[in-house]
Image 1: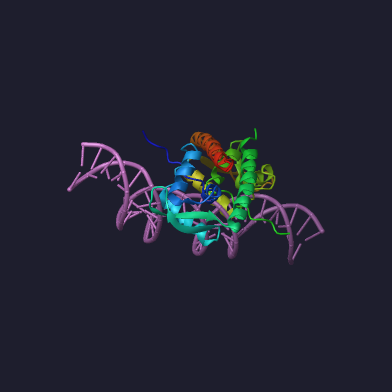
Image 2: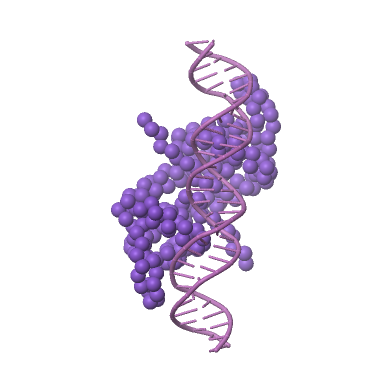
Length: 111
Length: 111
DNA sequence: CTTGACATATAGGAGTCCTAGGTATATAAG
DNA sequence: CTTATATACCTAGGACTCCTATATGTCAAG
C-alpha cells in the first residue's frame, strides 16, 4: 500500500503549527502528531519540515521555547505562542480565508 | 496607497492556469488578466511567475501552444489544454478540495 | 514622440519543502 | 541481553516555485 505523498502547501505549515501551539504549550514531536490527528491523517509533517519550521518561527519571535519534562518523563522543547505569534496567526488565518475564497471563485467558474 | 503583496500559494498557480485555459484557447497575457478578474483582484500574477509557469506546463505536456493572432491583431501564443492537462487539472482540484478541508479541520478546532 | 497597454521572455535570489542522515533515551519483545 | 519501536531532537543539501528586475517589441492615443 503506497501512501500518496501529500506535501503541505508551501506557506501553510507555519500557520498550522501556530494554530496547534495556540492550544497551549506543546513540544515539536507532539505538534506533528496533533496536525496529523486533527487532519485525519491527511497531513504528515516530516521532521525535516517540522524542526526547521519551528526554528524559523522562534527566530521571528512568534514562538518561545523552553526545555521541560515531557509526558514520558524525558526532556523536550515546549513551545508557546508569543503575543506577536498570536497576531501573526490571526493574520495568516484571515489571509487563508481570503485566499481560499479567491481560489474557489476561479475553480467554480463555469465555461 | 500600498497594494499588499499577495503571493499566490506555491503550487496553486499551475492549477489556476489550467482551469482558466480549460475555458478555451487563450494567450498568456490574457490568462493573467482572467485570473485577476475572476479572483476580484485578489491574485495578480506577475509576468515572472506567469511565463515560467506556462513553459513548465507545456514541458510537462499539460498545455499545448500555438502562435495565433490575438484579439488586438498581434501575434500571441495561444494555449490549449491537452488530454493529460485535463486529467491533471481534475486531480489538482480534487487534491485542493481535500487539502483545504484538512486545513479547515485544524483551523476550526477549538481549545 | 512619448506614454501606456499589449505581449513575451529570462536571469537570479529568496524561501519553503522534502529526503536522508545522524544522535539519544526508554520500553517492550524475543 | 539484544533488538525493535516509539519518543525526541537536529541539519545538510537538493528540488521546486515564487518574485523582482530587466529586456525586447508593437500599437494606439495624446
